[in-house]
Amino acid sequence: EAGVTQSPTHLIKTRGQQATLRCSPISGHTSVYWYQQALGLGLQFLLWYDEGEERNRGNFPPRFSGRQFPNYSSELNVNALELEDSALYLCASSQFDQPQHFGDGTRLSIL
Amino acid sequence: AQRVTQPEKLLSVFKGAPVELKCNYSYSGSPELFWYVQYSRQRLQLLLRHISRESIKGFTADLNKGETSFHLKKPFAQEEDSAMYYCVLGGTGRRALTFGSGTRLQVQP
Image (tube, rainbow over all chains, first blue to last red; front, side, top):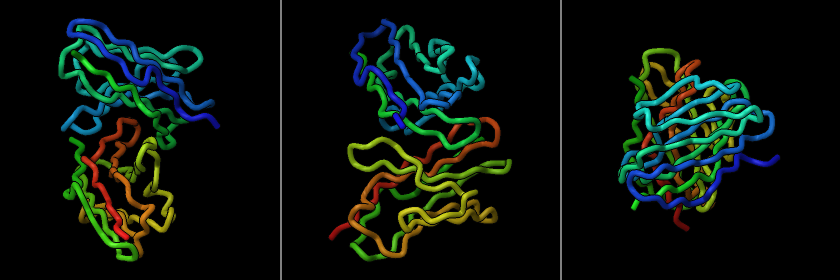
């Protein structure tokens, strides 16, 4: 089966711009999760989407937002980019409360 | 608040030696615990889930609620076990995983 796919692999932006990251879950998985892995901070939960709805949110400001489409793919949007947003963003998917499967991530670099 | 502590950043052992990667957690409810592994140039993948109680690639982990620990063990390390290991806590029903900081295991020949 195809795994979780994320695009782009690498994204370079400047401060104040907006970034859009994309994720396609494993076929049959309805839940999508976003995590941030910033240098020195480890992996932190960002957002959980299920059946098109935001179900849970981590301790991140509102400029981090996203959505889930009817085909269960998801977008993560980060507005008004700041230098500290530079990180690896991982997407994961799961079926119901089964273990989460991770993608390779999108590395976001803010100049 | 949920917290996972992995006290060792790096654990270096020789091939054939026993391995124990330590993990302690803090959670007020009934925890769900995992070990995820990331091999070089590969994505993060599930190694073990505490409720399944199975051995994967020779690794086992037992949940000790009294000591709030979930240590990962293998009796005889192999070179292919070299990887980054994350202890992960899932709060029941909330799906937000809490990751430890990870332990890099180096198995030397």
